[in-house]
Length: 560
Image (cartoon, rainbow, N blue to C red; front, top):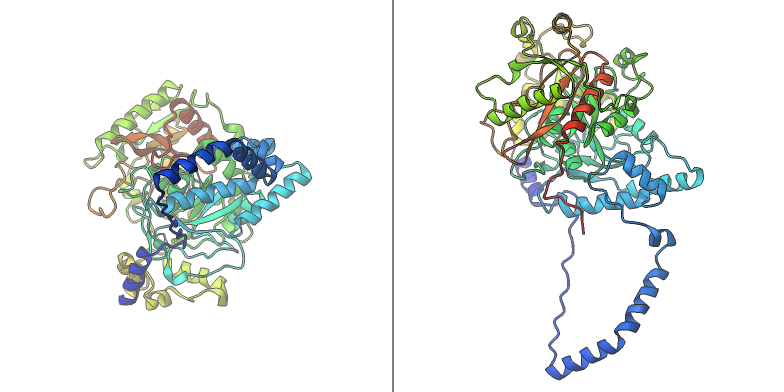
């Protein structure tokens, strides 16, 4: 590991985006008193003429459209607001991208947020094409001009895709992942790739050998959760408008909760996994991360759909509505039957402030017209879930590498281990994925979520309990503890997302439910049945609009 330790040390010292600024050249002038008086006199005599001349020169070189432009602030903006600004001429797609790049340069490295791995060098050119298209047609695509942060395990044809691993540095896929292609087709701009927990191994933190440590914008001494922490931190700090993450057990919902975002783990099969570096393919799913429920819904409209390259998406056929925005109803909670799954937060390690927020969330749901079933119990939960997880990281990643043929820097995970190009903290787990004893101990058969007997039994038990209680959805805190401090691996993590959705295929959404300790965000999870995204969006939107818990991180204000 000596090679990786040396590289890793260099990595932490260096700016991964090579965004070094030249120092200003300061010129010192030493005037005598008489010279100063003479200078002031001349300045006063020429001030008016100089000011007028400066104004004329500047305006001669500024396009008329820019002179007429009213300032459009990109911090905390929504998709609708951004597209209205483009439509009205307040801003262009190019100016949007320039604005986000300025924010990345001003905040990402200087604050040590370190959420971005690489900025797309073609983002401005892509923006220009969209501006020309709008000028020519007067029409806008669904995500026209929207700057998207893409987690670094999605294949991007014009940017390296590493999964957070230094071993994959420089790897440029020949095609976009299916979800990335859908975003581009909808007019979105891939602005940047975001940092992630290396190989998506860790739900608690976001640390990689390719980019180092990502921090939480609400408290830079704390973690953003993992593994999609780079996307979460970026979107929360308005370094991009929206983002996409992946979720094997937590990795969309956890970072969304820690960063005051809305995150959707879609029903298994609603979105394609093609072109995503896997963790455990049977549980992996990609989805949106956004600052509002509406933006997440607009993203999901684009991302959802059948992909022949991912057969499990066949399950979604006939189950996708024309659009998801039709379910944005401020009164959507009236008559909703909601079960409170206290097993996840009535524990000795639950933070009292999280529990207080959860009790307030339950009261808020009730105040908006929901009928609360409290507590909701799943019979034999422990028995049903004991040892339910399975998967073969080595086989899944080897298959991914094989699909890229000679273009992939390594053929197998064993080759990656041999290279030594990975973070020391994942050493034991990475080597364990190729250990014959571990492979022999894996549960078999390990089938997809729709055909595995253990997973089907668990799913059916939940459905039966919900039917008996006449429930529409289940709620619980996304995490039962506040974000850990960077480097803390001992305090209770509080992750409640690993089982209920990932092991059933059910959809789940997290929405901000307030702050602990003054500024640390917490999320409320609403879990629904298969392909019940419309209901979740309806309920989450009504809760969001009634409570308005989302607020931007104070250390990342608009640029002056």
